[in-house]
Image (cartoon, rainbow, N blue to C red; front, side, top):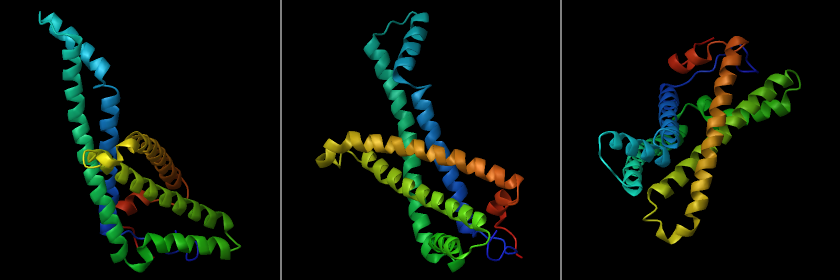
Length: 216
């Protein structure tokens, strides 16, 4: 709800809603591939499994051969992760372009500026304006994390072309992984926040992100 005009319900354009749900699918898929490669297709675990299963069929393979097969399987999963990364980069570009074509009152920059102005100017309902500013700031951080994730991810995906910067590859990979955990934390906070809001005063947030929200 708008804290200045509480009878006005926020609306989301079809493009924003498409971006939101497509982004949710792509990020979820990306995180799932990381989870799979760190558990199911982990090189050590998988190579031991392959070797044991082949031995049951009286096929003998060396540790290096089993590890090579396991690594190849892991690479296939990472290939899917990279494709999700390309989709995330395309969605991020789409979101930035969308910011220029959105209606004025639906632009994210305008919303965060409005929340900041309201927090400074409105002495009454300070709790509501503080909450609004905190939520918008959290989303700003999320967008910043997406930018870092996309840039570092593309660096790793095209590392052969980035040979002159090979010395920073490890740092870039560490930053990429660290941002992944931060985004995972944001997802948890976001879902928890929506759940709590639905149970309190801001009912219909999920349906608004599906159908765009109502009018007055």
